[in-house]
Length: 251
Image (cartoon, rainbow, N blue to C red; front, side):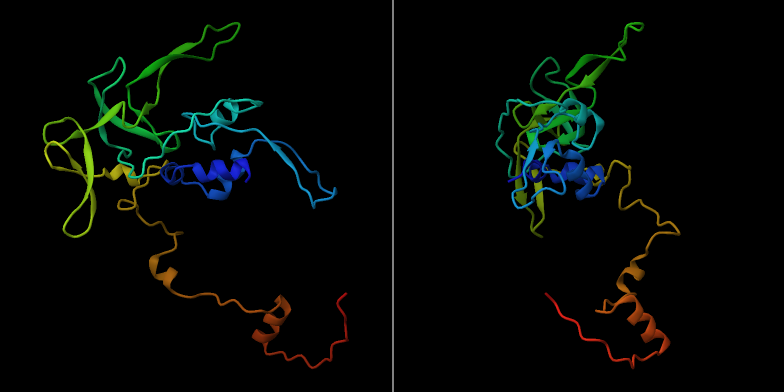
């Protein structure tokens, strides 16, 4: 199996949906191809040499990801156990239970489900120097670092605003919800979970004049036929073919 297809398959749906980019584009920019069989050469044994990219806080379609994975030939991978029922979403209030910010609460800004990571606004930060050169000392900024789920963070119970363990349960109407193990209260999924990087929420989006309305989608405006362009024009203009075609053979 190709490395890029494996990486693309491991990519979380939450990340892809938030990016609001086509899957074919994400798969293309994620490739780290060093050499492949050139065109014009025998293709019955195609070969491709690729770098094995790794996940970081940068998403695979960003320039930061390309810069970190450039010219890397040997890397160490630590496999993580995937979480069956993912319980953390963008916009959730969580409490940090690890590190120097232990006990503090914040809002989930980004999700990296491939590594069981979340990034909380303003918490678990480290200093990074930006723009350093020979003539400029650079500027130091604080950058949020990922926190591991669920050993380093907990969801906040809306009943008492404290961290709590949660369980996934079903309501009477069959809805799958998150429930606090301490108070039994439902922790709703925030609306910002449905937003994309364009800051568009489906409920608040206003249709524009050039958008295709729901009524136009239901109406069939094109029917596919096994016809060439010339045959389609002849049918519309009422022209009938009365010429006898020459015999031809397939080899």
